Image (cartoon, rainbow, N blue to C red; front, side, top):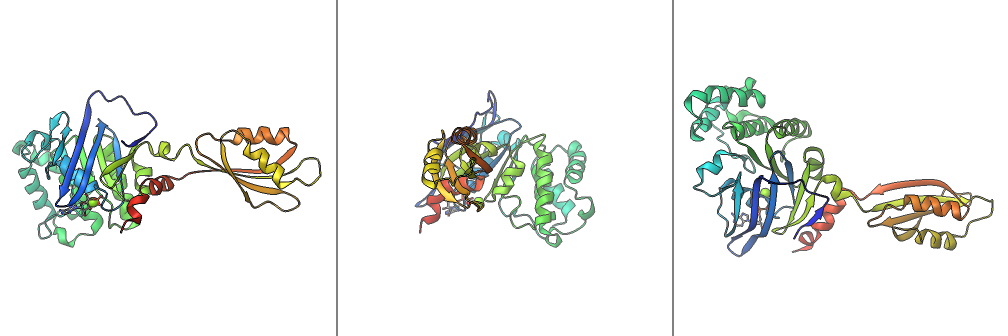
Length: 331
Ligand SMILES: Nc1ncnc2c1ncn2[C@@H]1O[C@H](COP(=O)(O)OP(=O)(O)O)[C@@H](O)[C@H]1O
Ligand SMILES: [Mg+2]
């Protein structure tokens, strides 16, 4: 079971429901039992190291790969290679965006609209909307192979939204892009996320911090965390303090340390840099309870002058590394 961070929204009618998903490729168990739900309208980041099972989960959800066990539903409809109804609701941008290199952008999008079964009478309007949305007006006559990677991703997003799906499944949508292109694609995804439910995978942390309301961390075929980016960071950190004596005498390190160790919430105290002039520095670690108030009260009680107090929360990156560490040390 994944660690839960914070409360989840009420989910009467989830857009996505995945239960007990298992999938092996020969001897490789890519998914070892994955469960989660996504309410309508949420933008979810699917985060995990390479090989964690992100793409496999997304392929199953998009109906491109059959799971060995478990069920995936989209808007209450079971997903599978034959479930046309479910697929109508899904827009999928596969990893590495494998689109036809030798086709003209407009021809490609027309082709996709036809294949997806967009009714003829609506095709023109839908094409126009997707082209406008993804900023493709200037490159319609170009071959896809000629486009920059950023524009290729825009074409990939345009093909995913052509049939106006409720759910977008985007597998590493910014991978391989330069920083400017990343910003643009992220902006586009954020805009799309205002109307649609989005699941996007990435192995880049900053991606989810900026774009997603919720993060699912997957490692080695299992979910290991589920929560808002802030909630995944919360609850742990370090407070560094610099103290001196308020009454002019030199403070004794051992005594001050013992005082700080007694502050509620503090789990470990280590010496750190002071400011000179008889001041002492300490780093206080905490796991659950922010000890700053207690530090202040202890300083007052013991006649210590608090010259400095700095708070550093555990970063999402630390959480991610801790939760996925096992995979990294494996041969
Ligand atoms: N077509 C495949 N054949 C064999 N093994 C695969 C295949 N696709 C994925 N795998 C393996 O399944 C595991 C999960 O892969 P994947 O879902 O692509 O992870 P991620 O997208 O998180 O990098 C990895 O060990 C990968 O090597
Ligand atoms: Mg992948």
